[in-house]
Each structure stands twice: as structure tokens, then as C-alpha cells.
Length: 282
Image 1 (cartoon, one colour):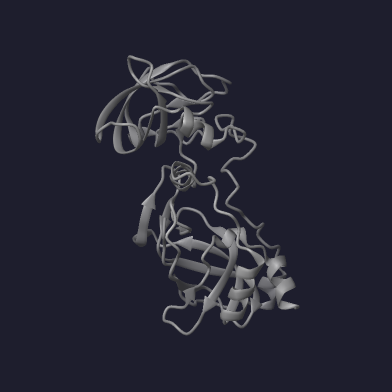
Image 2: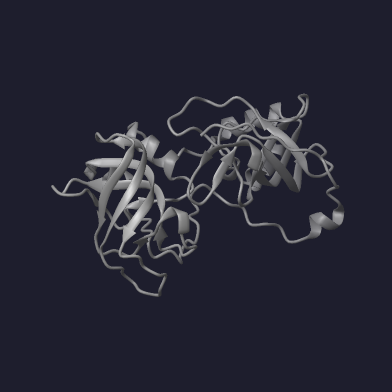
């Protein structure tokens, strides 16, 4: 998941704006609805799921029986479904229709064309399956992974790496501090017209806009369109700009290009403003 970010100045970052309550910093570890999503078990390691699965595919639900309406139930009855397979990450199955079974579980399947907003509903993403001799059966506490970082996490584990990219080291941060003209803690939003990867709950764009929250180095007038600089080639990619919702982080900008370039080679949301302030103080 590799991206180039773009954004452009509009408005200004006034003293009044700086005095407003700051947005909380977000990180790659955060899960949407954390603490409220009973269908997600953070303690279930992707590494174990990958090892135990016979088949892992990406796709979406196109038919399901029986249909289930969102309720306050703790568990949901078994379902059978047909999914449209887009790609195979593990195992041997061609793109196209695949019949699967969901056992009793804390989540339910729903057709992608009419998916409810309930976080217990799963309509697409990464399907982790075990061969049970009849139809493949979804495996694990939640068998359909639609978390916004799931594609990156599974790609890395399948390549024999830890699921999550490590945060930047102090040496990396020091290099970025020296190279950058502007450092800003900002809220980033991707450009819907520049989407490079889609997940069921969030699209990622190669371009976006930064809304300054706190300028840590240099000067920045206001909203700015930026482009992401070259990234290392890694399984799952590095980072991109979220389209449907903003994400805060620290962005290191080279202002010599048009548009300005973000030189981060690790996720901006894995950098915290206090780390940069310490480096700037020497």
C-alpha cells in the first residue's frame, strides 16, 4: 500500500486555532470501535490464523442464508454464503464464486450490496478458511477481517514478517528532522479521486490534504496539499492517506517541490509530537 499525498494551502493556522483542544493522536494499532466491537478479538494473532488456515482469500459476500438483522445478540447462528473471490493469498482457488460456511460466532455475514453499518456485520475483506471436506469454513474468533490495516498485516505475515510495521527509530526521526523544511502535527484526509487501495471500511489514496494542528518546525499557513515521497518496497506497503476519515500524525515536509513532499518512510501516525519536540530541543 504505497501512496503519494497531495494538498494545498487554504485558510490560516491562527493563534486561536492553536488554542483549540487538540485532536487525539491516532496510531496504526488502533482498531475502529475498539472496546465496542465484540466481533474482533485483538488477542487472536494473525500469525496463528495464517498458519492454521487452508485457504485465505480476498473478496465480498454476494449471497447469504439465512439473512440476519443487526441485534444485541452475543452470538449469531451459522450461515452459508457465496463470496466473490478477488484474489487468493493462501491455498488454491481461482477468482470467482466460492461457497463457504460460517459457524456460530460473535459476527454475522451480510451481502456487500446491502451491508449494514453494524460492526458485527462482515460483508467483505479477507476470508480465513479451513477445509472441512464440504464447503470451506471460516476460521477463528472472526473469520472475515475488514480492519483498515488488515491487507497490510496479512501480506506481512504471509511473507514471514511481523504483522505490524515497526515505528520509526530515533535515527530515522533525526534524519527527517534535519531534512525537512516544515514539520507539522496534522490531520490527514485522502483524495477520493486518487484512491489506490480499497478496504471494506476505508479507502486509501495516493494524495490528500493536511490540516495543521501544531507546526513544530518552520511556517505553514493552513490547509496544504502534499505529495508523498519515495517509499521502501515492503510486503503490504508502508502508508497512504485515509479517505473516509481523517487520521492524525506528524508529517515531515520538503517544501522545495510542487506540491510539497512528505518524506516520512513510516506511517505518520506512528510518530508522536513529543518525540519531535525533544529532538528539536537537541
